[in-house]
Length: 251
Image (tube, rainbow, N blue to C red):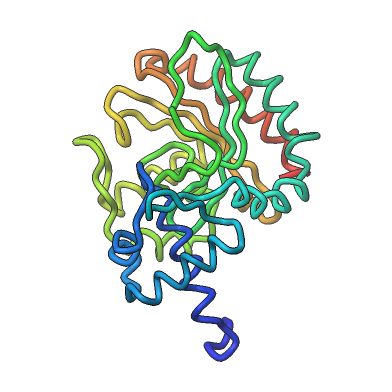
């Protein structure tokens, strides 16, 4: 645990301003950013102008958007794990074999965040998510498999908070989710249908490291009708597991 005296509250507030753009569908004004972050308007103004000066925000008509420079913040993470040179080619090979787009995600708090993506058959529907997109751990296959291979105490901590409801099929009861996680560990993959988006199913496997703890997860998404037959799900999960084994030393 880092001591409070070693933390810069101003820097934390600056990061809150940047993170406020994550779900923004349009440029945000200073009053909007102040409202979203809960930071005093005058402080928000100074933070925004500092981020403009540093090149992380762009201004037009007194509204602000992130600049391409924000992508540099992720470049070290991606380079260290050889995403472009090693991870992406492996995923591309398996997406062709599967005929599905493959996403690679890691856990970030109570979300799964996409860090790599390889398109499959363009004729099929895709998830519509991009690198950097966040998904809930409890309502998606890629999130559930991350939870299934996580430390039990951490799972209990996450499930202690109320789970969001996305569709009538979303599981929110911790006991039901824990039962599903146990089944995932036995089966080796997660299969979730209609809990995050109606009519959409997903399959995912864990990329595990030491002590069988998930370092990341690989998942595919498609119309629920494509994944109705158990043998189809098992076949796709087997290929995903092969891909996960190949990637385990890089992720």
